[in-house]
Amino acid sequence: MQFDFKKLGLKAGLEVHQQLDTGKLFCRCPSLMREDRPDIIFKRKLRAVASELGEFDPAALEAMRKGLTFEYQAYSDSTCLIEADEEPPKPVDREALETTLKVALMVKSRILDELVVMRKAVIDGSNTSGFQKTMLVGVGGQLQLKNKEVGVQTIVLEEDAARPMEKRENEIVYRLDRLGIPLIELATAHDLKSPGEVKECALKIGELLRRTCKAKRGLGTIRQDLNVSIAAGARVEIKGVQELGLIDEYVRREVQRQVSLVELKQEAEKRGIKGISLDAKDLSSVFKNSECKFLKARPVFGARIKGFAGLLGKELQPDRRFGTELADYVKARTSLKGILHSDELPAYGVSNGEADAVGKALGCVGEDAFILVQGEKGEAEKAFAVMEERIAQALEGVPEETRNALEDGNTAYSRPLPGAARMYPETDLEPVRIDAKYLKRLRGELPLAVEERRKLYKSKGLSEKLAGKMVLSNKACLFEKLLAEGVNATTAATLLLETSVQLRREGFAVSDGMVEELLLAEKKGTLTKDVFTDVLRQWSKNPERELKQIVAEMKIGKAGKGEVESVIKKIVKENSKLIEEKGMHAMSALMGETMKELKGKASGQEISAILRKEIGSKIKK
Image (tube, rainbow, N blue to C red):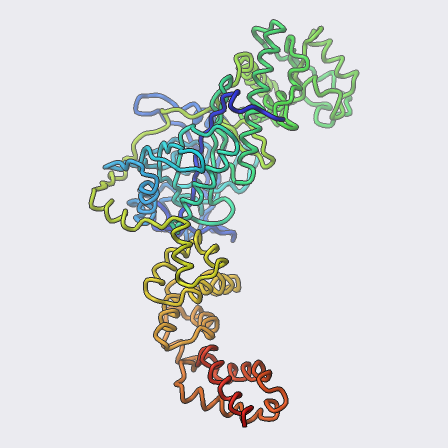
């Protein structure tokens, strides 16, 4: 479906949440995601609390009304009492704070003189305390896209939520390994006017955050929330977009949904529909012997919707209709699993005769429609009250709300938009003072832009391929430090981007410190790069030991020139017949033999030069 986004008055903004590769924000536990069996389990129920003004946040109230129990899984060696909300939080992680301040400086945001940690009410179980700790760091700023400048509204540092693992009946299971991992939240102004601009802006923000060398990598480490509206619609927040390749599609489909809801309102006006009342009636007898398995011999209730025939089946997004919207509201606010409606029947085992019997029992005529729910009377009445409210909203237009991103690019209702009543000060932490001297130091440490990095790396002899891999790598900052120390650029990049990664996949824990020491040893001439892989394998088994101890154990080290020449002359002499037959073509075979004999005591370049000279002298004779 094609849209004229300018004519529709599309406005969109982004909120990008990026996990930081530092320690946890308010405790000193590692930011470590785990899949092994947790050894601590406890359960809680959560309640919404009033703000300092005595007001309740609507999103928190809706979550509390579900009456859910929350099970929390934890680890005795990588989570602590702070995540369980049994101990006061510790001061904010300094590395996470400095990274956030640098991002704020990079976009020319105005950094606050005093950073105050706030509690943001969250009653969905994703935080054991019922609130998320968050601090506003900067306001304002700009992002430069290809053809326009996009305003930055806020830059926030906050803790990530617990990880949902399983949903049971009336219970959700969370794991506390993710709770407390630092998140940078960068929110833009609603300056984006097309799906393409939204995608371009998301890529630009991702690049900006990766330049810090502190952005966690992998699925779920960066999440985008979208704020989308059209002139005739309303602001809708889409939570949890993880697939960057689909971000423009989420915008298109939200535009499609709002356009369709506006059309639904206009059609209802044409039909003279001004108000809806859903009076539930027991229809269990109609389905006593039904072929529909989830209705047969169960309590079933129905209600007539005057003049709504065809509107419940109106498509809002691909494979999602207005009836789907109603079902989402029912699932979000009651214990029921969904609804059936007349625009989709007969289906699901409900026959024509049963559909006609329902219409007759409810008094449906002309353009009337009906809705069915299966459940006990109390929950059914609650479901019809929820749907009556949502239909009343539809008669007014597009409601403001929060929606969850689905994997296919569609969205589903989650909760009302949160209000200002969800925020109040964190009483267990003192404000953080930010002075001019501190910011001056941080300005001097800001990461290079991508093209500045590429230019620097290539000037040091790095190939286009390696430079391209390094510019947005988390190892870029370390790489630049090593370049300043005078190490070989290509050796350093290969070791950081390829060798270390491969060894970690093999199960060897290779630290940045190990890499740095090896490169400095090569620079001093005490080791050659040919032994780096073997040394790292051995060193990772005993990381507390010094490099010189590992080298001594392995009986390796840089050989003197005399020793290298002696070994090569011996090998050349032993292979004189091969040299007579193949001449310089014997070079490859003898090179391998020499490298094996010297076991990394000399560089390949040094061995090649001496070997070529020795073979050449034999050929001339």
